[in-house]
Image (tube, rainbow, N blue to C red; front, side, top):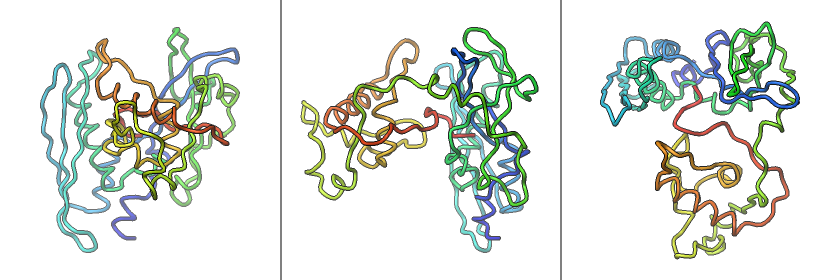
Length: 292
């Protein structure tokens, strides 16, 4: 097996961890969405499998306001079938009395670095995961209104498991499927439908610019896995999700200028869009976190 294949191969189901992304209660009971991730030890073990002793990492810490920030650099020596290279990842963790923020920042930065080598990247492609609520759940959760509940993760799809791995043997059917529509925000009055291929081939065919003459398509995503990409570079399904679902979130009581600019650009694009012939897209929660 090539080094690249070793890096990218799925992890055994017993090395996959799960956390709640959001939860709540409705007329049909408690519902919860969950995300799969790998821990820091699994990431390092994968590098050992691929490179043996021919890799190292360096941690650099700083503080910004009340947040601990860590940048991890992973260096790989030149080995047969894989050139020498370095990758970096950074994470910031706000102060919290329940955690060691520097340790958490180091762990997050390490995992953001290894994804640049392909480790765990397939977790981005997992379908929307709904927790299975039940008294025999291995995990516990709590809704905003104070209801505690137990839950199990869903079964991973076959393509996300190593050969011969049966997974967690949890039935993929879930009462949470009944709550899928309850947990989603109401659809906007106007959904986005853009012919990406047409305006990429001919920029003049794209919807009109903003009223002030600026090009909304040149605005960049400033967070999450699409950070650094302009709206023009996004696939239609992804662009449609941002335009219809993403809302700026205040930080310390204020909405950042970057959030304001992005939302204004999306609204301009949405205002120039035609009605779609398909359901709006759904994507995993964005934000600063990678899936694990």
